[in-house]
Length: 288
Image (cartoon, rainbow, N blue to C red):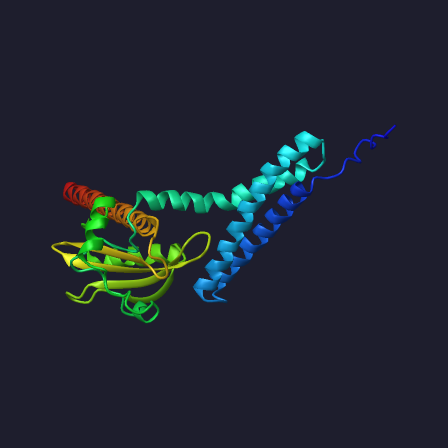
């Protein structure tokens, strides 16, 4: 008579064990690829190839996990924990790339977005850092795709003077921890300009940003350009960056203008009080 193994002595499913191993290895390769891209240790192509390999291992971990579920259920083997580890880690690694893939089907394949396609802010200093042929705006076709996908991306009109708008934009760029490579304050009728390098949240891809602030009547006009340095599809990242930056500039300018108005009202109130006090004092001297 065959003896049943003692409780806890069931053999472990090899598929389950390999699912866990592949998932842990995929996680390690993912972290390594992120470090490589963010630090610039290798060129972008081998770094992305490393990340692609991590996605393949994550997919295999999920497949092995599902196969092991069948084997564990059928043969009563141990290893469910390995299977769950492989499945959840694999899904976690693939989730964000899958989300980007979904966005790629909904958004146009553009990598350079600006508020002024006819006269986009220039990359001057950044032109030396960008790949050859990518400093000039792509042209009318890209502009048409941008208008169709992001109709809200437009120049920002402010009632504050260019110098105030420039100070606000420079402060917000610094607050975002972008690498500022050039900044030129407005002089006479010459527009102000800021050039900076932003980084994507996870992989840390470099995205170049140019901000132009031009005088317009008694106020100013803010134009922004954001362009990916390495990708042909930005998955909506550049438009989102421009939209958020312009909203923050608009809010800061509105708050600054309101504070100036409040300060002027306080000064006017104090002047009126001082005038009334002086008038009262004069009346008192006449009565004496």
